[in-house]
Image (spheres, rainbow, N blue to C red):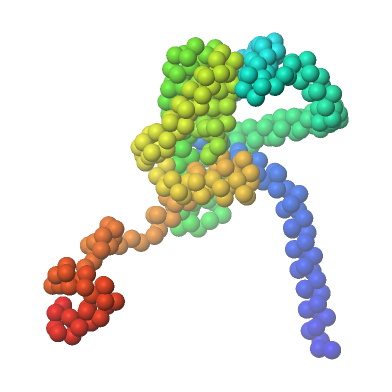
Length: 382
């Protein structure tokens, strides 16, 4: 046996053990790393407001606290308003449910010539197996729901705590990071940090502006239809449709449709049609004009980044995918060398025809499978 073989085997086993230990630690800490990533992007989003307030003489920690307090108050107020609205609407829907059921049964009886009754339908629903299984599963899942809620609250508190430290101690964090890098690398890190702040802040600004426009448009529709709680519903549609990518519009439109259905079933169709039409207007007219000055990213790239972020980190990845990709695109754009594009019709989607041949000759050569073109070229024409 060679003298180096035992040492190589021990080294290979040690490296394999270190790899397994690192993989185990990474999988155990993946939740914490995702929370830190969310907190970092949240700190980048509020960085412009905190820096502006600290530039006017306010301590950075106090400015960060005031920004978080304003966000917290707005969020709690919105949740309470929406919760009270939903509670009232659920009570009204439960009280009016027999009337809706009677109208549906009458329509079915008149259309299909049946003899259904509400009592029979209610008895069949109450004594059905799937309803009993659902009640049993709901009763056994109360503890799981409570654990999930407590875990979500703890995670939210952790994210706010990390984001507060990132925003309040931003300059100290940048100094600590730059102190271990050479001067050339320090400039690149600071440039990347500045780009991330600009792109994340621009993303939040553009989304907030589009949420405001969407909320106002839907508020006008709901007031015109006479749907109750129009202000809360408009705020709901504006926020959910903009800050939940891809499917947020349809999730946001489901609640106004449900409330409009309690007023008049046809109003729900009006709301659905308006949501679809406004979504097209936003995608092709409003969003390109707003994001071109804040987050300059192609719609296809944005959609692909959202899909990739969702596949990697779920809903969290969908939220931070667009600012992350915009930051990476802007950072790489500063180091990628670009050249002037040649003046060729094919660049603009045109075709480059050979000059000197009439149209009839081209058609004849195309019909003959190129023979005419070869003979013409042999005759000396270009």
